[in-house]
Amino acid sequence: MNYAFQTKHQENIAKAYGSALSISTKKSIEICNSIRGKPVQKAKNFLEAVIKKEKAVPIKRFGRDTAHKKEIGAGKFPIVAADQILKLIQSAESNAQNKGLDVKKLVIEHINANKASQPWHYGRKRRSRMKRTHIQIVLKEDKKW
Image 1 (cartoon, one colour):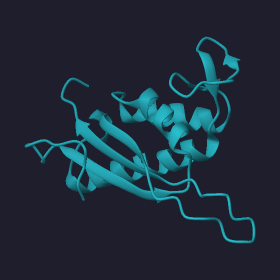
Image 2: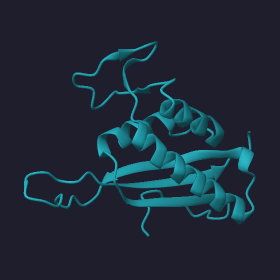
Image 3: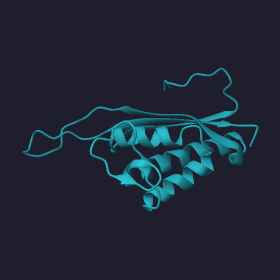
Image 4: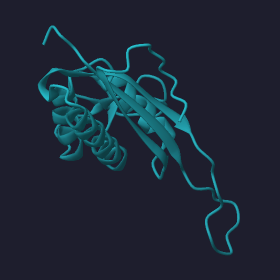
């Protein structure tokens, strides 16, 4: 698997890859931009709050006709995308635990969402495509936490 993140030090990182997830690429990009660089526990709490509709994801890039939310400006509650990304973060965290890294010191070093193939929906109505997204996550053990 070719990751967009390259490093020589493979001993203190853990990876996870979600291939062809059935979520919106635009919403995934906004979620990835909001949790990149955060500690894993903070990111997991944020995504759980998004799923419960307690916190909104700030929409900065794909924000056309988006309503404003408290304290952040334009924002949405992408529940399905947040749930899939949360599962992927938990998978990367378990990979780190299996590798022997300290789970409390993990930081999201790299998270990336890319557009996947878009097959047709089945049926007589021909002009609708499926939404698919590839997501890469790299967690790094940070010494300062």
